[in-house]
Length: 143
Image (tube, rainbow, N blue to C red):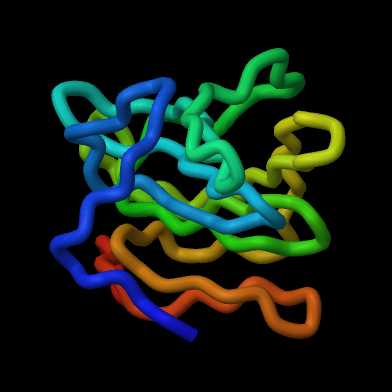
């Protein structure tokens, strides 16, 4: 496995995401998906980078209701879906909602949760054994 030097720029074409901070990234097959992030404004856009053509594009013709605009959240790959959790919204409120983007159908789904998870921001997340594990980050009421 080889790694690029930290100073090496990668040339891409398409949508310009410069200035986007604290978005989430997840690699699916030969694509990077990028959701949300802040900057001059907070966004809930979903973009992808095709790693074969190195071209950015905004994901179009999406069905369902996307998560609110946010940054500092996590995106985790699960069963060919992207799971979004937490983060901080435009009003500087921490989020505790879960949203699932089905890559194959381009559909956002918000599942009903049995338990309420404390809202948090700048945390880590991983899926293991079909469960989403959340660790760390900032929470208004740490638990």
